[in-house]
Structure formats: structure tokens, C-alpha cells
Amino acid sequence: MTKRSAWQALIALALFGLAGPAGAAEPLKIGLAVPLSGPDAGFGQGARLGAEQAVAEINRTGGVLGRRLLLVVQDDAADPKQAAASARRFAESGVRFVVGHLTSGATAAASPVYEEAGIVSLTPGATWAPLTRRGAGLLFRLSGSDAQQGALGGALLAERFAAKPTAIVHDKTSFGRALADEAARALRARGGQERLFEGVSRDDRETAALVSKLRALGIEAIYFGGLSAPAAGLIRAMREAGLTATVIGSDGLLDKDFAQVAGPGAEGTLMTLAPAPPRLPEPRGAAKAPRNPEAEMFAAGAYAAVEVIRRGIEGARSAEPARVAAFLHGGAPLRTVLGEIAFDARGDLTRPPFAVYAWRKLPDGHLDFAGNEISP
Image 1: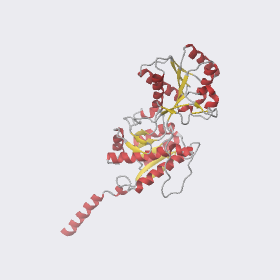
Image 2: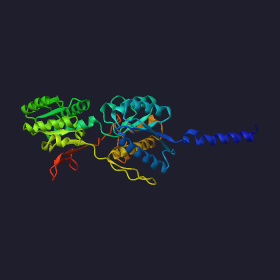
Image 3: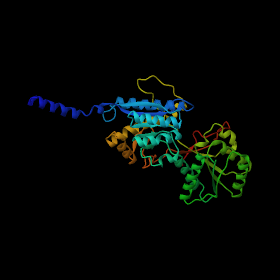
Image 4: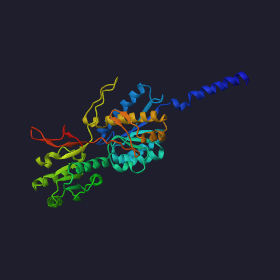
């Protein structure tokens, strides 16, 4: 080789180095794991629409750090086994960021796989509190947790019913007990103390015995951790016994039959609830997809999750998941379609998105909470 050709070879190698390795120009794979089959498919389809729209809009503006995004989709059917299998497929295919899963069970099954593979995952809907308490440093939650919701209920007891006899009741489910435990913790942290902490099932004899205890203690406010049916049954039984105590519940009361089963005495019941998600604008240059309440439920959350990935990569100045996770854990405010959000050291939102609603009687006589938001 002549000196001239050697020099040309060196220049070529230098230029190749400046251009970066061949993989640097490849798209950055973003996984999406949601239920696209089964009873929760409507929610998953909405999440897919939101994620696809976010990816398309980011790519239209140049991508992230000069790399286009490529969405890789897996159907987890809201099933833990399928969720874990989806997570393994993502790991094998080089995905390093995942939007999903929507349910707590699927997220719990997939999260250990992501942690071992070094994949950052962002769930738009899983609320089970322990998910972010198990040392999962790469998991982030874009919804409020059950613990945060229960804590808000306990704060309401302490602030609105200070120095009055209160009780905390749960429906003996793991969901209800977790809410009740957090409500009790928040109440006691504010100097309060419930007179009664007890579980009750839908059994009429259990409900009657509990109502008798509540009357004997002169209870004026109750936090109920659990689902709609046992809460409604308890409220009806209390009103029939002449007990007017205010009931504070969670989004577990969201059931079309709640007001009918509880009866007129449900008026004044308070409920903590995440605000309705914003409606995404129609994507540019695409055929209009069908929009319905199910699809809208997680569309904005999935869109926001892709936004968080983008802003995390830009903030860390790296697409390395560990660096992105460290940046997100730092609590930097991030602008998203859901508004400005930030994560704490566990991966939970620093400001959980819950509001308080009151069930009120409308002019036509039926009870509803829509439009009855009150200050927490």
C-alpha cells in the first residue's frame, strides 16, 4: 500500500467513526404491550392508537437524538403469563423501552423480566401500590397508585371530620384492604385515629352487625376501601338504620348500579377519582379511527408514555435505559399531553392525579357524580 492510499484509508476510517456505528442510524425500538384481545381489548386498542400517534408525530419532527422511533406491538391479553412472554420477546428483539402494561397483574408479571433485561417500562394504568415498592428501578407509573388514593381518603377524614368519630371499613379484598391501610396511615399521620377498623363482606348478617357497631360508636364519617357492591349495600343498611355518616370511597365505587343499589341515601357520598383523560386531537394525514370511551381511557396515557421516553432520552442525552431511568427518577418536570408530570425515586408520580367528587341528586331525581368535583 502506498503512503497516499494508506492516508486515504485513514481518512475513510475517521469519517466512518464520525458517522458512528451502523446501528446508530437504526430506529430506536419502543415496545407497546397492551391487551388487544379478550375483554379489555377496547382499552388496549385505544392505547395503541395513542402510542402510534405519538411515535408518528415525534418522527415527523426528526425523532429523538436524530433517531426515528419504531413501535413494536405485543398483545398481552391482560394476562400475566402472556405479559411475561411479551416481555421476554421484547428483550430478545432489542427493545429497551416499553409502554405497558395496562393492568396491575400483567405489569407485576412482566416487570421482573424488564428489570433483568435492563428495559425501562412505563405503565399508563397499573395502580397496585407494591409495583414500585419492590425495588423496580426501571418501572414508572403514569397513573396514581392505590396507596396514593387511599392516602387522599385518609386525609379527607382528618381534614373534613377533625375531632369527630370516624371509622375505616374495607371489603376484605386485597384492593380494599390496601386502600383502607393507607387511609388509616394518612389519618394517623395527621393526628387522627379511627374508632373502628373492620372488614365486611356482602353478607347481610355481617353488614347488620357492622352497622350496629357504627351506631354504638356514633360514627360520623367512614372511609370505605373496596368495590361498589359492598359499599352500596352498607350505605343502604346504614340509612335504613338511621345512621347518616358520610361515606368516602375510591374509584371502586365507579359502577353503573352503585346509586340504584345504595338508594337515595347515597347522596353526599364522596369519591376519589382520576380526572377524565384528555381527548387526543385527530392525527394529521391519517384516516379517522373510531373513538369511544374505552379507547379514550388509555389513549392519552400511552401517548404521554412515549412523550416521557422522548424527554427522558433528551434529558439524559442518551438512549441507554439506565441513564434515562436515573434522569426520570431525578424529578425533573416533564411536559406531556397529561400536563406537567414528574416522578419520585420509586417511579411514582410526585403529584397523583386524583380529584374528589360528590354524588348529588340531579333535577330529574337520579344521583350522579359527573360535574360535581370538589376541592380535595
